[in-house]
Every structure is written in structure tokens, then in C-alpha cells.
Amino acid sequence: MNRTNDELVDEVASSAEDYIVPMKRSGAVLEAMRAVDRSLFVPFADERVYADIPVPIGYGQTCSQPSMVAFMLDLLELRPGMKVLEVGAGCGYAAAAASLLVGREGAVYACEILGPLYELLCRNVSLRENIIPLHADGSSGIREYAPYDRIFLSAGAGGFRFDEAPFAGDLSDGGILLYPEVCGNLYRLRRDGETFTRELFCGVRFVPLVRGRQGG
Image: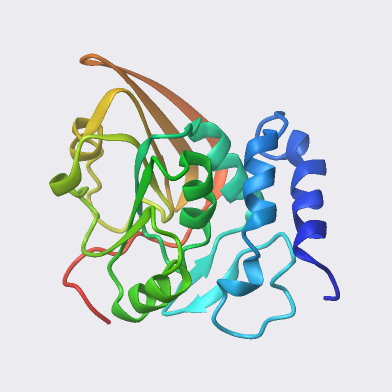
């Protein structure tokens, strides 16, 4: 496919009002995605890298569809200075865009359990000082660096008994948790003190979240 990253982001912008729910992509999210060239994150030469589809990155994982990444970043309402946790960071594509939205005063903790993908993540974000790669099982959160202003999962909850409570408990007041099912809904929880409000967005599909021992 003879396209550019700018053309990909143009497609993400133009199709936004027909994607899951009718809403325009924010200018800040689109600007961040223009600054993150997707071809630099995919480890294999693939003519589909500038297509608005998931692209395999090995080990049963994908670099998520750009429209989905943009949609999730908009739902997270990221602002400069925020501390963010991403679980299932893979190649680092979404983390890189998020890092631009939180700025130098913010931080993105990018968690990846699979050893080879963690190594890829580290290479891809090595020049981004506000991204902290973590090689860990994040399927129950990462308590060490909590609380977080925002938490999002870039893989689907399913295949094991998923518990959102540890993630919700690691949110700061006013924080947002965003996570998808493997095939089904995308959930957004917003914390207000000890009260949580929930929204769901129908019709998503993700690779399953991996849990277990670090490595391979």
C-alpha cells in the first residue's frame, strides 16, 4: 500500500463519526498520531502498515488499529502532567501517542509481559524519556507506581477470570480506567471519590490479555 502516515491519520479523522459512536477525534489526539509514524513500531516489513487495520507484530499480538487507538485516547481525556498505565503495550505505538498527550511533565508506564515484545517496546520508545517500560504481568494492575490518573488495557479481558477491582483501586480521584473485552464491549470507569460511574461502548475486538510468568 503506497500511503503515508499522514494519509492514515487523515482516514482516522474522516471516519471517526462512523466509528463505534459518532464523535470527532480531538485535534490533540490526531496531532499526536501524526507525530508517531506507525511504520517505526511494526517490526516486520508490511505493506499494510499505513492501513487502518490491526497489523501482526508476532507472538499472537498486533499493533492495534489506528482508529481504535485514537478512539481510546480520546476516551481517556489525557492532559499534560498525567501519570498513565498501559497494560499490554506491545510495540509501544499507543504508549508513544499517549506520551505526547501527557507531555514531559507526565509519565506513561508501559507494561508488556512477553519478553520479545518487551525488548521491541524498549527499542521503540528508547528516546521517549516520559515512557517507562515495565516487563511484568499487568493482568491485575501494577500497584508499585500507583495511583494513576489513567489506566488502559490494549488487550482484551477474557480467557481467565478478569477482575477490574485492582485497576479501579489504583486510580487517583477523578481517574479513568478503560478496558476492552476480547470480543464485545469497551468499558470506561470514572472515579469520583469512592464512587465509580461506568459507560460501555459496543462492538470491539482485541487479542486476549496475556497473564502468567514473565517471558516468551
